[in-house]
Length: 232
Length: 220
Picture (spheres, rainbow over the protein chains, first blue to last red):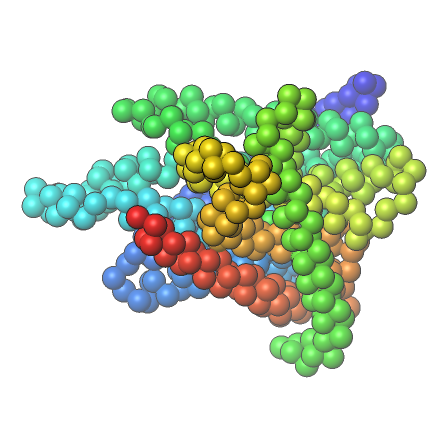
């Protein structure tokens, strides 16, 4: 494994970039996705319609195309952004469409009786949302959200197409220097399997700590399966 | 705004659209067949094959499709096979999507109550007949909607072919912006074309979702 001796630092750095891009994209996806979910359940069509268009447009076009639009489009109107920033924005906004749909299902699962009860108790609308509705919705959608996180982690590999030296990008660089194709890509593959494995394990442990009573056993296991579309 | 220039470049865009469509249709067929066979094999629970399938599912679902495509494309060349971008993408997409589609079929198989299989066996139906006449019709109605969901993902995933040099729709869009600029407008048109394919498939998904729930109501 002399490949490790020569390129160990780069590979570990690349792993760090993959992790950074994943965390930032997922954070953006959660924030924007929550707003989208709330907008889609809004009483006002002026919020509902744009949110619906947003979700449909982003879920029905490739993530790679969206990455290109941000990366090549913004410089064309005079905004210069780095490949990593462009990639995180595109992946985050893409993920937001999926998170929005997941959370919408979660919000629909909170019974309207609870809203009435909160209103009767004189709890403000903001507090009802923050303390009654959202905690339950997030609990309900935890497994699909974990699934979305895994999809975003795998999706960061697309950033290599715009020149980010993430795990995939860096292994392409090393491959073009050394031509040790099998070794390089095997290392990258193992890297991804380790990340996704660790994240699956960590989220399972986290669920045990934060959810009381615990989530039902069957729902705890994040299935690496999505019913509508993939991040790419 | 560049719309005239884009119209002048309609021929490569249409070429790309056709190739994306062709790639999608081919990969849909191959990955559905492979996914179905994997689900069948999983159901049979053969000792060694079962472990191999487990490892296959773990690797292909736990790593990015792009890396798998690079592995196949560059790896085949490294091992001395002559594979063009189209072949590499077909193989990669098939293996990747089949790992998800197998899961859809597996869930579909499980939706058929075990009692029916026992009843069929008691009635003396052959194993093939049980599969064809009892399991398959009931599985089909359940799996069609999620299958179409997977097909939408597949169409979007074909765009990764552009990275290894296949002149699909996205690649043509890139080439056009490289020539004439207007990235927003060109990629907007490309996006609309992807949306068209995806939207047709989502109509299919919606239709079969309705069909499946109608069947459920009728059964109870």
